[in-house]
Amino acid sequence: MFGDRLPMVLTCPACKNDLELVLSISALLDSEKQDDGHVRLAVEGLHVTARQPTSRDLVDAAATGNREAARWVLIERCVEATDTHGTAVPVGELPASLLDSVGDALGAADPLADVVVRTACAICGHESGAALDVPLYLWAEFTVTAQRVIWDVHALATAYGWRESDILEMSAVRRQAYLDLIP
Ligand SMILES: [Zn+2]
Image 1: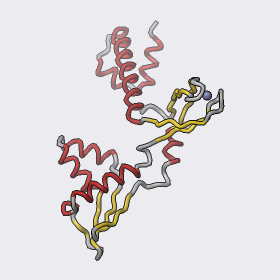
Image 2 (image 1 turned 45 degrees about the horizontal axis):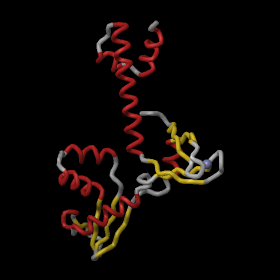
Image 3 (image 1 turned 135 degrees about the vertical axis):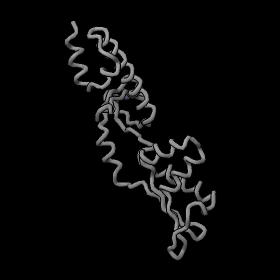
Image 4 (image 1 turned 120 degrees about the vertical axis):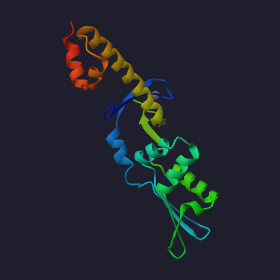
């Protein structure tokens, strides 16, 4: 939605200068791809395999509107268990403590849950790592974009008398082209 470039400013912990850098989101995703994010646990005679929820799973879980129901949607989609004979065990029969361990293990295995950006300071050469807070970053980008769209609507509605819904249906490129024509 916001393109591949992820501009950041970090402060060097040694010399306190601001460092500007641009991460490539596709490169970031590629570098984490070798790990499939699956976890496998064997406890109490059970073999459990769990995968990371996809965004589809998260949307469906959120649609239940209820924390406990959402949790079970994710468990049923993402967790599979077999006994020592290889027979499937329904996830509803798994002990709660085992499901908690699976959740912890998935959190620890999520390759993008903890993104650390390593960089060397261009001024003093000090090497440091900074955690990238992906949800916080996305929210900041989203807020800025939403504000810009509101200003675009305001400018186009004032100049051309168009309705908000029509302006929002245009692509960003088209909107910009009309904005550029406003004297
Ligand atoms: Zn420095």
